[in-house]
Each structure stands twice: as structure tokens, then as C-alpha cells.
Amino acid sequence: MLVYIAGSGAMGCRFGYQISKTDNEVILLDNWDAHIQAIKAEGLIITGDVEDKVKLPIMKPSQATKEADLIILFTKAMQLPQMLKDIQGIIGQETKVLCLLNGLGHEEVIRQYIAEHNILMGVTVWTAGLKGPGHAHLQGVGALNLQSIDPENKEAGHQVVDMLNQAKLFASYDENVLPNIWRKACVNGTMNSTCALLDCTIGELFASQDGVKMVEEIIHEFVTVGKAEGVELKEEEITKYVMDTSVKAAHHYPSMHQDLVQNHRLTEIDYLNGAVNSKGQKLGIDTPYCRLITQLIHAKENILNIK
Amino acid sequence: MLVYIAGSGAMGCRFGYQISKTDNEVILLDNWDAHIQAIKAEGLIITGDVEDKVKLPIMKPSQATKEADLIILFTKAMQLPQMLKDIQGIIGQETKVLCLLNGLGHEEVIRQYIAEHNILMGVTVWTAGLKGPGHAHLQGVGALNLQSIDPENKEAGHQVVDMLNQAKLFASYDENVLPNIWRKACVNGTMNSTCALLDCTIGELFASQDGVKMVEEIIHEFVTVGKAEGVELKEEEITKYVMDTSVKAAHHYPSMHQDLVQNHRLTEIDYLNGAVNSKGQKLGIDTPYCRLITQLIHAKENILNIK
Image (cartoon, rainbow over the protein chains, first blue to last red):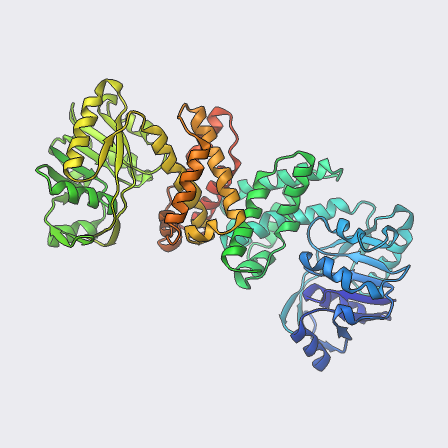
């Protein structure tokens, strides 16, 4: 297979690196000049559980021309539409597109550019970090679930699962991936936005009764809206999952904290709490916690002059 | 009159200083040792619109023994019950007690210690700052409104108004002071808590649409709960007042920002947004914005290890 990684940040580099160790061909796409230059000059440097350096082709999305067998979408949420526009030249009749972005609402965007029978929606618990341009730091083990959104086209999904498992990415075909996508969005929507607002670790958030209470109300809004959309969600199970995650990740600052507080970058809030509020409004369900958190994060972006 | 200032922070010093220029007697009460020592040693130093230094008696609340004609309550909200316990020795049958604290819910606390016919509730737009122990910085002009909560006892309120006007404090007897108390609480509940959370000036908060939208929802909750309690509030008028204040005070960090962010002190959130949420719960009115803001502020107090 010819596999493009559309958005080669930390996670894109992990997937690109691991797939490059199989007999498939990988091309990284990204828009960060320093990252592209570093990988062209030195190769992609890997540290963490393994130390390695690999030559991998990398280019800007609009420069790619060879038709893809698979494109793995790994952009930041707000960069997705532009990425899909930029890669039109590599999308053929049978090009599969796997979305592994965080958050909600991406399927609707992808459908504007990709035929339904080629779309695969997925969710992963793999993690990765970037130490600098061209340098990915990879620790721990993860997994991913994916599903063809066209029920007639499961076969395409299974082929991608097999390829990802050659790359030791521990992929499974999931007959109902949406609840898993929502569950991860709910973890992000409870911890990322609040820790970014409060400038704290996940453990510090959950250390107070007030922190836990607001998390519970946010979960309730996610579950209520998700269920109204037909997604099978169990509030008790998701609450337990969030609480378990908060213990395991207690010492971490979530990614939105890194974006907003540490690096003064735009956040993905519109695809987490903001998405729940928008969906809620369409469904006639009030989600004041998600709405206020979205407003607070946007107000903070404005205060920090992030555009 | 013998007037005690119960809580001689910045505002208490302003009132104590101005009253000391009349033929009434003033005694300051406070619990901050360095402040007490400085005023005992050097007198109260005044800078700002005037430069002055005055000898004023100051002591801990529990050390006061001479029966008061008037006690002006100027503590932080959470210090009020302890102050009322500590000054029981100076409260006689006819001692009037004027509450000028920020926030909501103080009348219920005061009623536990003071007979109704002696209670005066008020609200002031005077401001003041403390430059350090024993040093108040006073700029600008203000006013205050007050009312006897016992309608049979207006006369007591008018006497206090006259005394305060001798001290050039521009006091008025108000036949309906509650809407003014709520209006000020609403200003504080919209700007103080949000600017403390977002670490920004009032102008920075109001500079974004998201900031303005959340302010509007908070005002709506204050007005809905206040009206349900029988307070005459007009949402449009209060919104205009809040917006006007945001322009005048654009460059200021509100007092809760000073407490939480600058000095890591407990905030008065339970007497602002928290009070609206508690009252709302009793009345069966949901106030999610006030509740989430209260939870966020308490979570932040916990993260900063403020006790």
C-alpha cells in the first residue's frame, strides 16, 4: 500500500514510523517548514522506547501527486478542511481515508470531500510527543479501533486493520466505533479544557470535590447529547473510564494545556465541548457547562491574542 | 456617636478616616497584626487625593469593650460570622449595625446576632486601596445607599445617613436598597470571578464576543433568582450598568483577581455566583453558569492550596 500521513505531528510520526517498518510505502505530509527541512536533512529521529533514525519522504500536502491507497488523517481538528482540500490530487476512486483525529464532528467534514464507501472512522489511545522538528519521542503501548462508515464496505476496513497490525499498531475492526470516539472525546472534554483553564495537572483537577462535580456534569451533557444522536453511551461506564484515566494520567498536563497555556496556540475546544453544545442546540438540549467552558476557552484565546 | 469599623481593610480605613474628621469617635477593629502595630506606632497614613496621617485607636475585635452606637461591618464576606461573634461585648440594646459588605446573603447571617430593628443594609461605590500595613490610598469619589430593614425604624437609618454625610461620604437613605445590593453583586459576579479565572483585566474580558455572551448569561441567572426572591431587578438596566462599568473599569483587575491570582487568598465566590446558585437551588431555578464558575474558582483555590 501507498500510505500518506496527512498531518505528521507527534502521532503522525509514530504511525508513519511504525508503518515504514513494514513492506508498505509511507509519505509524510505536513505544513511545518522546520519539521520538513529537518526530516529531509537528517531523517526522522525516534527516541523513547527505541532509538532510531529513518529516511522518510515528507512534503507539503499540496505537493503530493501519487495516488494514495490509504490516507491517515492526523491533523489538528481545525486544520482538517484545508488538508482535505490540499490533498485532492492524491485521492482516487479507491483511496481509503482513515480519520484518527480527536474530537467530534469530523465525519461531516470528511463527507464533503470523500465518498462514503472510502471513509473509515477510528479512535486511538496511542500517544506520542515531539521533542522538536524532526524528532518524535515514543513511549508506551496503545491500540486503535476503526470502522468503515459504509456497512457494505467492511472489507476495506479489515484490510487497513491488517496493514496496521503488521506495523504493530494493535488495530481492531470495530462494529460500532462511535461510542469509543465519543468516550475519548468525553475524556478530552472533561480534562483538557478544565486543566487548560485552571492551569493544572489532571490530578490537581480531580483532587477537589468541586473539580469532580464539574467533571460529572460535563460527562452528563456529553452522554445526553450523544444518546440523542443515537450513539450507545452508558453514563456510569464513561464516568468510571474518566475517573480511571484521571488516576493513570494524574501527573500529566493534557494537550489543550500545552496548546493554550504553554504554547499559546488555538485549541480544539470547538470539536470537544463546543461540538456538544452545537449538537445540543440543534437537538433542543441545553448544555450550559459545555457552552460556558467553550466561551471561557475562546475568551482566553482572545486575551492571549491567539489567532 | 461612637462608631466602630469592624474590618479595617482599605474600605474600613477610608470610612474610619473620613468619620474621624467629624465630631464622632471612631475605633478601628481588625485582626491583621502588622496593620494594628503600624497604626498604633505611626497612625493611619493616607495618600492619594489627600496626604494625611491620623492617630486612630485600633484593636482586635475581641478586645473592644465600650458599647457602640454604630458598628460598620466591612469584613471579607467569609469573616463576617466570626466578627459578629467577637464583637458581642460592644453590642447594646440600641447599637445600630450597618452592613457594607460585597455580595449576597449577609442579612441572614447578621440576623443571627443582631435584632432586626438595629440592622441597616447598605451598598457603596466608594473604592480604596491598601499600600501596606497602616497605609491607605484613597482616590476618587463615591456614594452609598442604606436602609433600615425594619420599616418601623427608618429614623435610625436617617441618623446614620446624616452622620456619614458629615464625613462627606455622600450617603442616601434608600427606600428599596436590595436592588442596588443585587446590582453591585451582579457586577462582581460577572467580572470578578471571570477575570480571576481568565487572569485578565475587565477590558480584556469584554473584548471578545464569548466574554460578553457569558456575562449576559450570568446576568440572566442573577436577575432570574433575584426576581424570584422578590427583588425588583430589570435585566436590561442591569446589563447596561454592567457594560458601562466594564468601559469605565476596563484597565482594572477586579478584587477577586487580586485575591486569587495575585495574593493566593480565599475568594468571596460563595457570596456572589455561589450565593445565586444556592438560592436558585432552594427556589428550583437552575443556574449552571453561576454553579460552574463557583466550582472552577473553588477548584483553583484548591490547586493553589489556599485554605
